Amino acid sequence: MGPKHWVMTGAAPTDYAFDVTDETFDGKPVVRLRSVTDPAPAFGAFCQAIAAGAYLGKKVRLSARCGPSR
Image 1 (cartoon, rainbow, N blue to C red):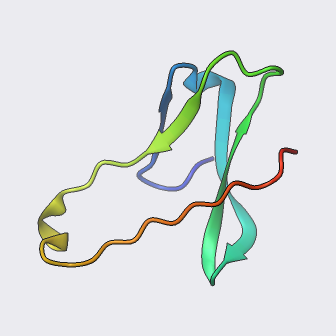
Image 2 (image 1 turned 180 degrees about the vertical axis):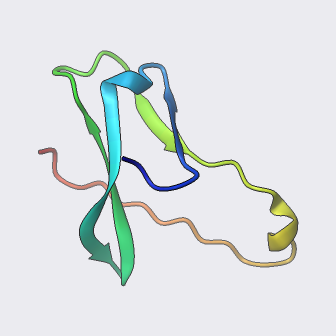
Image 3 (image 1 turned 180 degrees about the horizontal axis):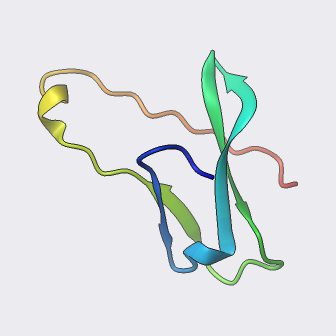
Protein backbone atom coordinates (compact mmCIF):
# COMPACT_ATOMS: atom_id res chain seq x y z
CA MET A 1 0.00 0.00 0.00
CA GLY A 2 1.41 3.36 -0.96
CA PRO A 3 1.65 6.46 1.16
CA LYS A 4 -1.57 8.29 2.00
CA HIS A 5 -2.76 10.82 -0.64
CA TRP A 6 -0.40 9.50 -3.37
CA VAL A 7 -1.66 7.71 -6.50
CA MET A 8 -0.11 5.52 -9.19
CA THR A 9 0.19 6.94 -12.69
CA GLY A 10 2.21 6.40 -15.87
CA ALA A 11 1.77 4.29 -18.99
CA ALA A 12 1.45 1.02 -17.03
CA PRO A 13 0.52 1.88 -13.43
CA THR A 14 -0.91 -1.57 -12.67
CA ASP A 15 2.49 -3.12 -13.45
CA TYR A 16 4.06 -1.28 -10.49
CA ALA A 17 3.64 -1.14 -6.73
CA PHE A 18 4.78 1.47 -4.27
CA ASP A 19 5.01 1.25 -0.51
CA VAL A 20 6.56 2.84 2.54
CA THR A 21 9.59 0.84 3.71
CA ASP A 22 11.12 0.47 7.18
CA GLU A 23 14.13 2.47 5.97
CA THR A 24 14.84 6.17 6.42
CA PHE A 25 16.95 8.59 4.39
CA ASP A 26 18.19 11.73 6.14
CA GLY A 27 15.70 10.88 8.89
CA LYS A 28 12.71 10.77 6.51
CA PRO A 29 10.59 7.77 5.46
CA VAL A 30 11.57 5.92 2.29
CA VAL A 31 9.00 4.97 -0.35
CA ARG A 32 9.84 2.26 -2.88
CA LEU A 33 8.48 2.02 -6.43
CA ARG A 34 8.99 -1.38 -8.02
CA SER A 35 7.86 -3.34 -11.02
CA VAL A 36 5.59 -6.32 -10.33
CA THR A 37 6.05 -7.69 -13.85
CA ASP A 38 9.23 -8.85 -15.57
CA PRO A 39 10.09 -7.09 -17.73
CA ALA A 40 8.10 -3.94 -17.09
CA PRO A 41 6.33 -3.05 -20.36
CA ALA A 42 6.28 0.72 -19.78
CA PHE A 43 6.90 3.30 -17.09
CA GLY A 44 5.11 3.72 -13.81
CA ALA A 45 5.17 6.57 -11.33
CA PHE A 46 3.36 7.89 -8.32
CA CYS A 47 2.23 11.44 -7.73
CA GLN A 48 0.31 13.76 -5.48
CA ALA A 49 -1.69 16.90 -6.25
CA ILE A 50 -1.76 19.60 -3.59
CA ALA A 51 -3.19 23.07 -3.15
CA ALA A 52 -0.27 25.48 -3.40
CA GLY A 53 -1.72 28.21 -1.15
CA ALA A 54 -0.04 26.94 2.02
CA TYR A 55 3.35 27.01 0.26
CA LEU A 56 3.27 30.47 -1.34
CA GLY A 57 6.54 32.27 -0.67
CA LYS A 58 8.10 29.19 0.92
CA LYS A 59 10.89 26.91 -0.23
CA VAL A 60 9.74 23.35 -0.97
CA ARG A 61 12.16 20.43 -1.30
CA LEU A 62 11.49 17.09 -2.96
CA SER A 63 14.25 14.51 -2.68
CA ALA A 64 14.70 11.29 -4.60
CA ARG A 65 17.38 8.67 -4.93
CA CYS A 66 17.71 5.72 -7.27
CA GLY A 67 18.50 2.55 -5.43
CA PRO A 68 19.53 -0.89 -6.60
CA SER A 69 17.00 -3.03 -8.42
CA ARG A 70 15.72 -5.89 -6.31
